[in-house]
Amino acid sequence: MNHVRGTPRRDRQSYNKKPNKAHLRIIWILRTIHTVSIEDSVIVSAAEFHRNVGVYQDIALTKPVTITKNGRERTVLLSAREYARLKRRDRRVLTAGELSEHQVDAIRNARVPDQYADLDKEIKA
Image (spheres, rainbow, N blue to C red):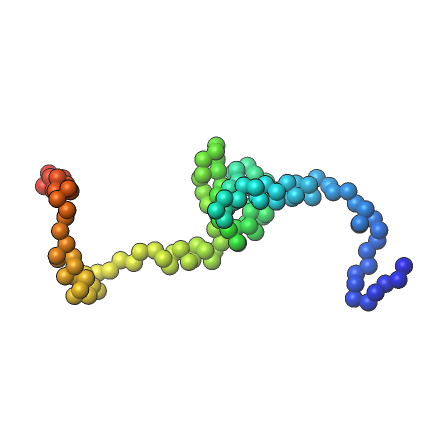
């Protein structure tokens, strides 16, 4: 058998191997992920996640993985980068001294619509 420089040698047995259970499981997972993907996220049961945590960690690098328990969404696995991005978008608390005059005037001149006038009772109570 001639060998071309730069290509790895492989014996014929590696090409003729039948897929084992692990290979079939991975194929099944990938097909499941493909069919269950909704709006660029993956939904998986807690049991399936537990059996293949590494696979779903890799998927979470590119899209959120929603983990369900008893058919209900329970947790979401995100990449560290996506989590950091979301944290940066959290609301920032300002002190009154940090508000501009325009913002202070807008707050001072804000009026509650008449349809919510009954909510004043809750404040006075």
